Length: 274
Length: 274
Figure 1: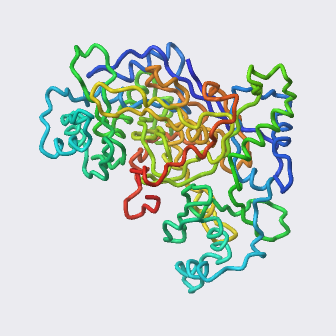
Figure 2 (figure 1 turned 90 degrees about the horizontal axis):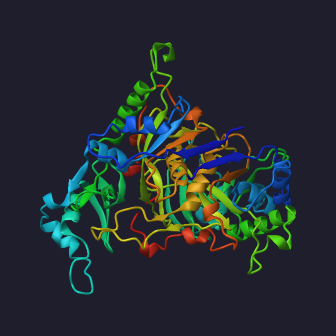
Figure 3 (figure 1 turned 180 degrees about the horizontal axis):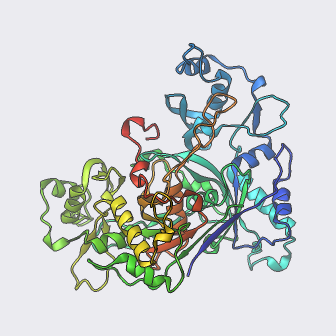
């Protein structure tokens, strides 16, 4: 019998540039051991802040295009609703602007993600001295996940005895970095995997044929996205708990870091769902 | 501290037309009490079979359009890969055919869902006497969820003491009916809510403003879809466990049945994510 559980890690302080996020997570475990069947899901803002993937709005100069886009949505007083500098930061993260309507930019990011405002978040960091800061997506979220996984393994004191016959490490939980994305066709946002290490992103049952000759049943499951969605349910939205430990997914956790969340990106020419 | 857990109900037999699905679920609980903070997630195929939303392939006559679409994908021997009768059943469930490529039809169903093959599944029922059967989506999945919820309440012997000041019932778990849908932009399928009773489909934080004046943060969360995804992770894919009990979402469970999963459908003219 499979079953799933997820619990948030309390007590992680506001993350700042240069922080050792794995160490903060490890400390928050408060003696509870991490093991290799677990998945540690981390909200990307914590990862981005630790990596310094933030932009101080005061340092941004908005270009012509940013001013144009900001001017698309005006307040009743005729002032742009959005700060053109914020729009500039979004454009800097964007390789393709898919839509721009009603104050929202739908972007394809440098990573290939399609999401609102290129994943750029307003910082909820307190104590910024009043200066406004924007949080970007991590530069390479799969690499971030691999780094955090390796560091968690180190902190948990994995020894050579934990290594498999190929020298691979057996003692590390998977690391999943999440963000909340809007979707086509359906309202609301859902947390998805943007970075991943040590877990199958997809569970492939496509080999199984169907009596009718039609591919009808779900046969290619986006496990990592489902885990991201589950992790988000395990914390209160305003709880400031960036890390959630998920148990019950050991069958998808792998010794090697694997292809990462990049494997979840559907190439444009194969996309029938747009 | 929030936390989430989900466990599948074992021992539910193959569901047949006319079965009392709530009774089968109740029996599978094996004495464990359902309570009002829980969510019972049910794979739609079980609901459809109980409601008789199935079609015997032998009874289907394919029309011209179905033959045309089936002929788009031929085997090496020049024979249509797909049975035109299966295509006919899919078309019968479809109000708008969005795409037809590589053996997959992307449809908007009568309910407004956008999914592959209009949600029509090959039956995995054994003992059909060799006749091939297709499973449709329930005719009105929100109504199905309400019905199952009411019946579960009845079976659990909820008394008047369980009623709130407005006479509303406090003792019923929410009921969530799920299916696996493909998505735009991203590979793989994810379970989503197609029917819902007694649970907020969306968690709305949109009132909160942002220092930068840009709607950047996730503020409108598709709770019911996240719960559907979590439920699917709690069972092995080949386990034939149609029902999963989710705990830890009491903050989203409501006494009234509420707007259902239909509230998750994004009107076409508001859809920027396609």
